[in-house]
Length: 441
Image (cartoon, rainbow, N blue to C red; front, side):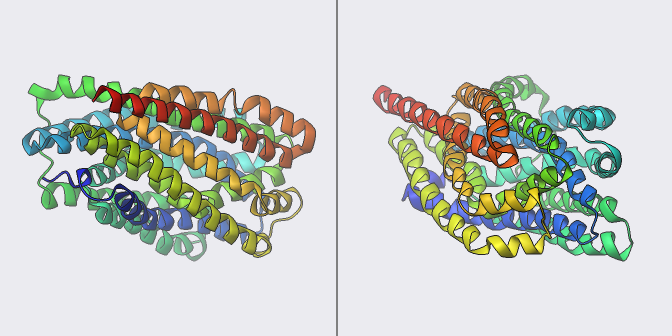
């Protein structure tokens, strides 16, 4: 079990890990966008709005799963850096048990609260009914998603980025094949889209468990003698990581509720962008999952200068990727509006985003990277503080002011300004904290 990230070019490790992860994420994000496209062909604006409302709730559950997988990957990567395979086997088994025990009651609770949550978001009428029909199918599969993502976290911690990519590619492929069959072939509409996503989650989990159990021989039955120690270590990392990730859906839900004041067209436009953004900037989402194992292995090996290289190399990668992605969006703006048959406010939001507001993701990418580093360097409380600040202090007043000044487009401008400020603050803190590691060494 070699700690491969402690040697060689750090920027090369960042690029290879990120592009491998990007390919898998692209498949999932593309399927999400295709979901929206298929449903838009039905010609019912409430369906697009329903995905927006349901998406705000599902973003909460997804963020929980991401936070749990980040903590899992962080501890496993540090164990790999120490070179003890027996201890790593015990760790993985116990962490998977803990993750399942956390997520199962959460999925039940969110399902029971779904009608109330949709009401808080401003959903009503047909849009609310469609959203609940979607949620009641997909929410029970949350434990499958959480364990699949934890499996991916273990793969990245071991440096097997390609296999992590295959896991997500498989999910995307299953979803892409089943979507048109369930939505149109069987005439199940939005419920068919939800069922296709459930089948994709099952496929991802089966692949992940097969590789960890038989490919790496890195999963056994839970080891109760070490369970308490692992649980304490895990919650020390997982709690701030989960809180960090849960802050984002709070901000998203708030934005959705403010958009709802401008009608279903505004919510639909925002929902389309919420599917388009991850696809266009998949590399930045992948980066946040890729640099954690790199930093974690080097922290475990006490190579602090390489941790600083990870931070600086990430910023370079984010800049280059953002420039290319923004230019592509600029060129495709009219085509995207036409493809989704966007009209009125939805069309305005899409054009403003493609013609310049998409550049906010350069700053979002910096926040993704610094949060990932904090979570993997035992500084997770900083990620929590910054992400909650981003979802509240750097979102609420900016969104309110933007809505008053410029309506739905003003909301996007407000989000942009908040993203700039919190990104610069996070970058300054990350640089200072990593510099202190080098000084102590």
